[in-house]
Length: 146
Image (cartoon, rainbow, N blue to C red; front, side, top):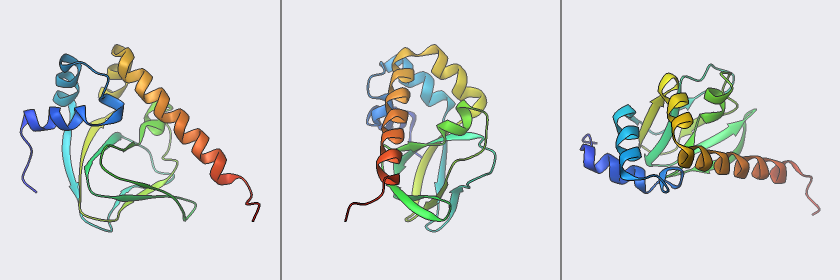
């Protein structure tokens, strides 16, 4: 995969729900912090229990999220992960494995915190995403009635 231009990266960020409410100035600030990374299919992108050092935004490809060895979710373009470990300066809550070749943008933890503090739109988008994850986790942990 050839690296993307700055304009392509800004456009890609604008398609991510987390960043869709951000203005162009904020998107340019975010883009300046990004690291573009590629992962081959079947590689581990984040490992449950390990220290988290960056936040991931998926630009292309598909990944599987597992907790305790059990698959709990699939991720694709526009999805993000890794924010919980950065917000609480803790360990990864899940393992994320690439199912296909992937291109991701990462933001280092030391850049992520000031970014979230400085942008109410990004903070709100992050809050909404976390709320959806919590609700999804509660629903999937309920016993089946079947």
